[in-house]
Image 1 (cartoon, one colour):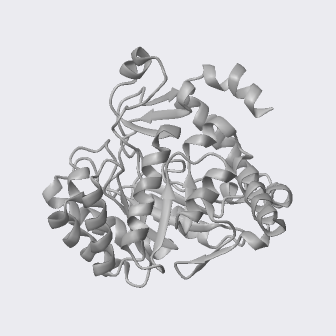
Image 2: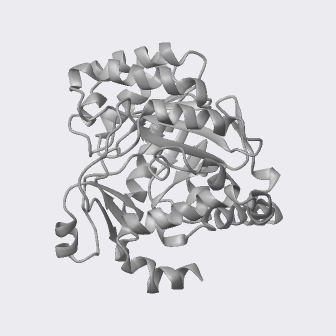
Image 3: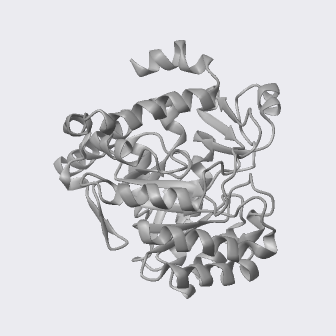
Length: 347
């Protein structure tokens, strides 16, 4: 049914408008009292639960940062079957993001190009909203992803991140430092070790006992990935999220004119899958077994998720395939994981 709706209606709409329409429906699930009913249909089987970061995740599959930028639909996303919801990216200073249009579908590639630019209402507003979310008895694990405010110079980035960390660490189950979006000028440069180390050390101090992770780009070299993984271990971080979107455009089947018209931005979806998996394997070969590694990028099916888990991911996230699979995506993933595990036992 959703495939038909997407083909006939949603694919004809501006992608950002279509996202907002879907978002309104997701927010409405708990607002109109349908959460309990929906969960009876979507809740993950208890056997899928994962213990990580000192937390219990009902499923290894969660929604990546970018889908719910301000933490407005956390409960509804949990009701749909996601084991965790990572909100953001949130910045200390409210910002509208880049000019529209800034979200583009590459349907033949099952991919998206975005240059949203961290549009959000700021850390203070988000902290107040998430405080209420934390009190909800039916909430999923809540991750909070923070980034640099656009108007802040790179040399002042640490202070900017610390403002967000002070506001948001108390309301998060885990905190993520995003230094890998291609849509904020200068941000990816913070992945250089001489800049990244003092930034993470400072945020970790403010975060206190709250698990702190760093999110990295797929466009790093293998050597850079290994060095950042080593730094995460050295600093005592709780984990690494790999990967963010890519600036590469290799191997796309979409008409090159369509890709060129979309312009700059981060590419996500199926074309990112293999590099994301490569980075996961590099990290897992570098870090201790107990370090949390969250794999994201090009994940669409239960088989994709299981492949990441088999490669050493502690948890897996998705986002882009929601546009192509619809609101029952997490349910399909969770049912598929259960089926794969049962077939393995029977074999």
